[in-house]
Amino acid sequence: MHPSQVLFQDQEQPTFLPVCDHYAGSEKLMLKSMALQNALGAVFDITFDCEDGAAAGNEVAHAKLVGNLIASESNYLQRIGVRLHDVNSPYFEQDIDLIAPVAAEKIAYWVLPKVDGVEQVIKAIQKINQYATSSRQSPAPIHVLIETHGALANAHQIAALPQVECLSFGIMDFISSHYGAIPTSAMRSPGQFTHPLVMRAKLEIAAACHRFGKVASHNVTTEIKDTAIVAGDANRAGIECGYTRMWSIHPDQIKPIVKALSPRTAEINEAITILIEAQQNDWGPIQINGRLHDRASYRYYWTLLKKAQRCQLALPDSALILL
Image (tube, rainbow, N blue to C red; front, side, top):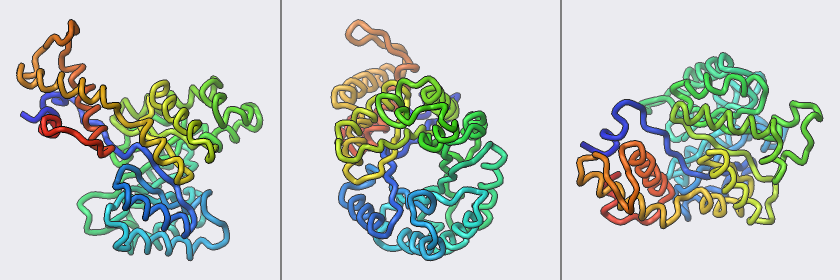
């Protein structure tokens, strides 16, 4: 049996996505992002923004541009998603109606911002599926921004929806929704990792994702010049909060995020050693360096190797056989 069949017999396998989600909202930035993605490979996703990151007043032309770029030959990696206007906006259905007919088959995912609860997400998914019919075998995955009180309260129900594959924390809208009760210092480090209400939100989102095998995507770092701050935020998001993906809002943020959220060489080597020994022992308990390992730890190390593969890290043949 394949390791995934042995290790996940009684549960669904977790979802794996590129560790960085880069947002672009203008034609110049979209083209630049596509060129960088094609150069680096699918180590990061791109989200074309029709909402807050796009200029207002030109919604029709912008949506048409998004659809044409996603449908173009330049998008051969097919790892570009779309953030729509929020479901209460008159532009929500217009975005789908203009983008889906030309690009539905190549859209990696749809992003829903500013939802208030699970019922609103369900209705939005139904509208997307209604418009975005295509020859693809299954509907495009849905990513949901958790940035309102209602969405946070329903995070587990939203994560449980089959078509949802990722929850993202929208820190700025979330803090703004407290009308000054949370200081602006909590929008950036170190405050974002110390304020109790912000950390509560981050941890609740991450817990909901891991409960249902979905991806938890961390909020942006507004500092775009100091990449050390970006890397530090990504490290803390992964180590302290359990996030496996993070937003980027500037091309210079992509590489620090990818590096910070990618498995380390020592971890990969340890995982290979343990999993090979486990496979040779028919996945029964083993002892390595005085430590006991069984299927619980095998799942951890196999997941780590899958993350390394998704990050396009060089893996030996002995590891690829396991995947």
